[in-house]
Length: 87
Image 1: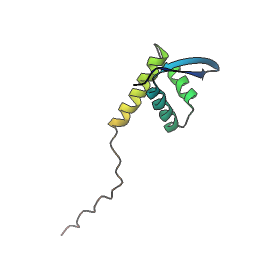
Image 2: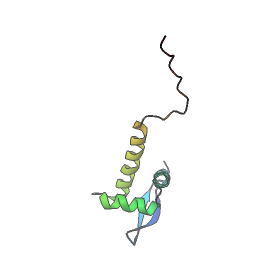
Image 3: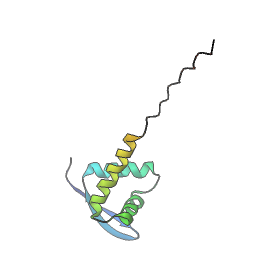
Image 4: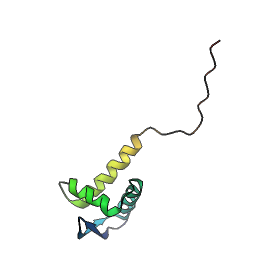
């Protein structure tokens, strides 16, 4: 894991800074793109639902997202063979 990186973000019109490892910044950026919203909007949503430290809440949000994604059944694109017609 990399060194902690501090980023400035806007949450509900207020500028604040959040410190996370670069890997978590990348994960949150990917999640925001998947959810088709800005990183600030994603962080604001997490902020509104948190009970503890924002950095910890963001790490847990990213972990929960990817754990949920890992549990979803894989979608296959291979064609399923047709069963043989009854004889």
